[in-house]
Image (cartoon, rainbow, N blue to C red; front, side, top):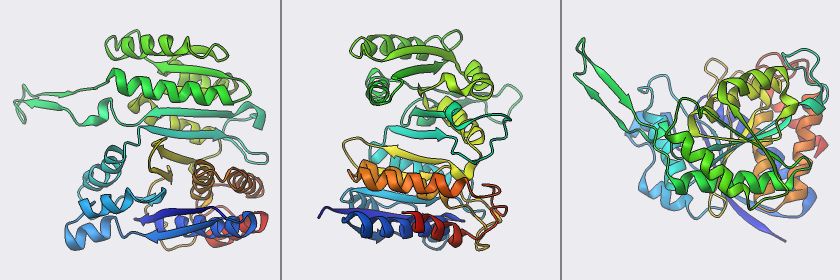
Length: 349
């Protein structure tokens, strides 16, 4: 019997509620598929920060490095200065654990209504591979004459050959496993001529190693248009940190909303972290009205990454089946409570 160790970090807002449902589903998968998951809860988030001043300690990191994966809820607190928790918990975890891939499947399940009329499930089945450690999010830049009328603010986008190549290679390897075997580079080569020259050259060079994968290119503004007008043109999309942050939220809308938007911060050879992309959902905490399907879908991705492929697929299938029965994926409009949605997934697993 296989065994896995995972860290469970509920975090803030509705994070603990959706993670609790994901854990419930994981336990159902354990019982059906005959593996075990040893779960350790970590109190990391806004409440601890406000009471102790601690965000993510070195001790936390050392313990997390010993886990096989992390199941994460959300981070953010209205009483904490914006950016502190995000920078010192989420971004530090990604950096310290070398989670250099943000992976976002975008799929329209049967019965789920997209805000884009007439879309069918066969029209929306893509995966966005977002570089997760470089670009505009490295925090480099400077102010000149801050606070004056002549103030200048410079934010630097830092892209390395190593960082770009490992992301592009991951995307090609993923595309090679999918039926369509197509990969689109999404960027802005006509304006951002330094960073995207590097991205395009790397993409072209790595692509020579994958003759079975067809390729394409889309400027990010055109990609936003096509994701709405004709999402079927995309299979796997690879892009940088900033553009990936933007187009994955657009993808969530196309597939029916944040309630179904699962994600992962991947270190393919280390500890990866799996989380929904919807955030803390202020105002819904404690109401039992938040949709847990995105968190459960992230747990499905985690099981697959841990090698429990059949279990991961069963959970994903159950998420899709339940999603198709709900009148809406929006919080408070599901027609049942958070725990009842979780129970529905468990019953199908």
